[in-house]
Image 1 (tube, rainbow, N blue to C red):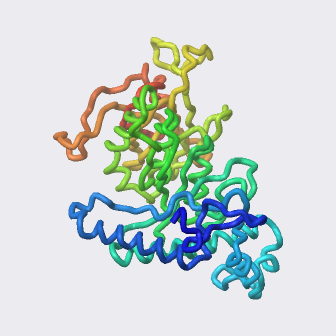
Image 2: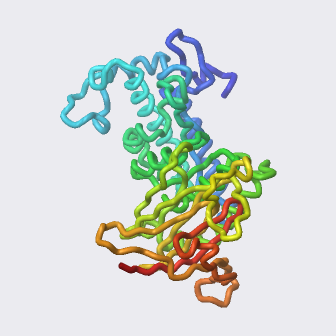
Length: 405
């Protein structure tokens, strides 16, 4: 494939230079890819009797770079052709791409997204005909300020989700590879397009620990995969291990409450955020603050109100909050302090009736697997004012609230 350019033609730049990208406008490229993928799925069907493979990624970070679109002969002809009706804006008449969307890199990116999506559709359909596993395609994301052609353009990105959905209906969803710090922003962009959230690649730093908790709690993620996790070490290994231990314990509750409005994830929305982070959970407003450095050991267990910094090493801070009853919560995470308020200004207050720390164990005598470790007193809850998951330590707490005027 790499050496036979006449059989497997390449995408080309506007100057006619060949790229190390197969053009999606070649039937030979598409059909050979589809045959190979079908053979892989046929092999899985006959050999993977234990069904260890539960999902398959079709292509990897597909896209165009360093220009927004392909300029090979087939691509030039397709670009002069009319926009397909399935992605034609409402009220528009079938016309060439630049007449419908304007002459811009954004139009070129739409054009390539349609071409890539149709290519991936043929490959995906061929594989599913052999073994109908869930299938997705992932995207390399856009660095802030970059324009089409300066990143792998036309991939399955949020602003192109409608084109990908129309062009590749056999895909079950599209997925982001998130290496940028604005993790919450990217996850929101994907779920807003109607996708379930699955993150096939993520940075394996200590931030992965917080990001994983947020993805599962906020968006009921299907999965979260730090890239090269077999090479993770030091603090990142410790914290990612702790985060996934929390997720494993909470998995029955996460699956039970996925999509029912009784679960959320908490993470610092922006690095410089100083005001409390307000998140609504039905009729309860959560106000969260995040501790990303170790606080001094204070006898009364309250947050470091003096503002003294005990250490400078950055720690993960995030939580999963699951409402298991009208005034009952399960909270798991690290470095997060939460207070509770009513949504309506009706004079009602919310206090903490009880707070206990423990673990969920499969072999526990309790029906729900809960193993009580200790009750948290006023020293640990700031005299019943907040729930605090201390920095540097993962914990799960069961909390009962009460209302008073």
